[in-house]
Image 1 (cartoon, rainbow, N blue to C red):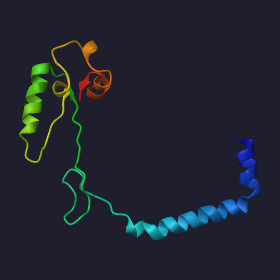
Image 2: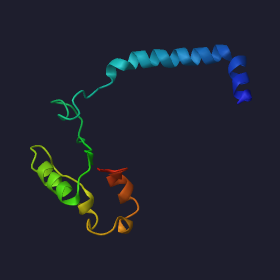
Image 3: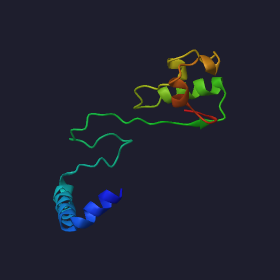
Image 4: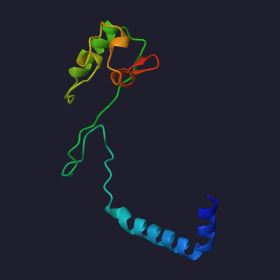
Amino acid sequence: MKQLARGIVAYRFVTICVFAVLTAAALVLTPHVNVVYQPAGGPPPGSSYEGGSQIRIMAEGLRLPEAIELKRRLETVEGVESVLWLDDIADIYAKCATLPSKASPALFSNSMVV
């Protein structure tokens, strides 16, 4: 770390020039950056964005029947293409210890069902 600091101090003019050039490049390229301002509403018309919006909903204090009902209600919302929940990848009536190791943290967060 000390060697890096010594190098920066020894070549401070070069370091300042590199940062100045990178800053100038960032300022010149800033107008060419496309930003999607409405991620939940989809991409703006005529854009080349082909990805979809993914929304994660966390519900606290739901029992399994209530969570299944919430999933069914979310599937009926206009514009929703799919809803992924625990019952899609595992038996929800089995113990949590039998779930795939990668599924449990992705679908549970502390006391919440994701």
